[in-house]
Image 1 (cartoon, rainbow, N blue to C red):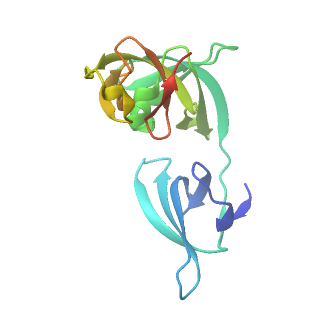
Image 2: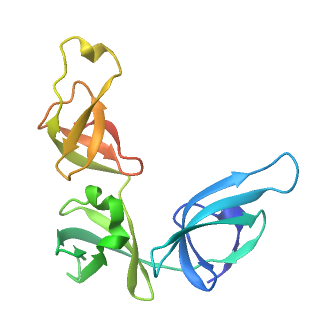
Length: 188
C-alpha cells in the first residue's frame, strides 16, 4: 500500500479512512475564489457499506488500499448472494446483495464482471461500460413522432427501467450504458 495525493483521487479507487478501507464513490474538486482548493468526496466503507462525505484539502496524502480483481461470469442469485463463476478454474464467488446494490439490473447470465476483493472478501463489482439488453416492454409511439428526439419508458429483460427513443419496440436488442443507465444504441 502506498500514499497517494488527493489530486490522484478518482471514482472507484480504494483508500484507508480512519483505519478502515473505503471506496471513493464520488469526488468533486472545489476551487473557491478565496482560500485553498479542496476535494469533496463520498466514501463507502468496505466493511459496513455505510456511505459518508468527507472533505480533503488539496495536496493532502492518504494511504491507498490495494484490492485484488477476479474476472468471473454471473451465474445466478441464491436469495441473498449473487454467484459468479471463474471460467478457467470454475471457482465460485458469492457476492452479497448489499455489495451489488442497484447494479443488480445490469447483471446478465454468462457476462464477465470484475469482482474486487479485500482480504479475501468480495467488496465491489465493476460492470462493463455497456451491456446488451432486450426490451420486453415499451410504450407505443404515435406515427410521426419519430422525427423528434423524444423518449419513452421501456422495461428491459434485466428488470431495468430506462428511457429509449420512440422508434424502439418490444423485442429489440439495445446497448445500455451501465454508468448512468441510459440508452446508447440499437444492437447491430
